[in-house]
Image 1 (cartoon, rainbow, N blue to C red):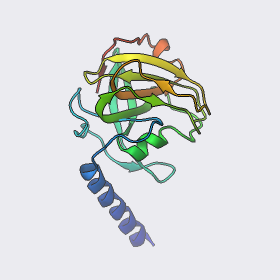
Image 2: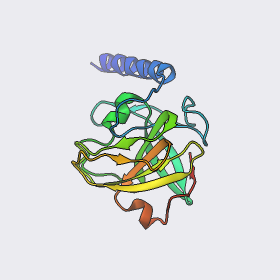
Image 3: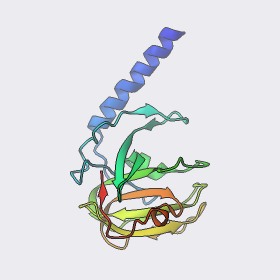
Length: 176
């Protein structure tokens, strides 16, 4: 039984590695979207220190460290159409200073919704250079579209009021 579990975990790790290096991260639907980079690089770069792991639902989870106004945030990376579409759906809560970082391969106006998301969230729309364009508050279980106020390449979802509570406003630069 242990050997079978080890073999299964090894296969999952191998498949994840192949996918992470071979997936193109093209933009998908308009649900919670995403991409990632290392200090405003390209969407194809793998953030330093990112290690894939299986989440509670059996899905692959990768995280990265982001800094906003000197505050360290751990963010799950959503850089494939599937990960961006799922976003933070079906979660009951978020840990402190934890969010989801959406990465896209290009910069354009995008919209997000909150279908099947149980917790209220803030979303920061971020341009190619890492500057926050706008921040919106989003209601749970809502199909309303929340649009970026300009072309965006990244988005960061955090618990409701996180940006206000930490003094983060549009124009601030995110370090990732």
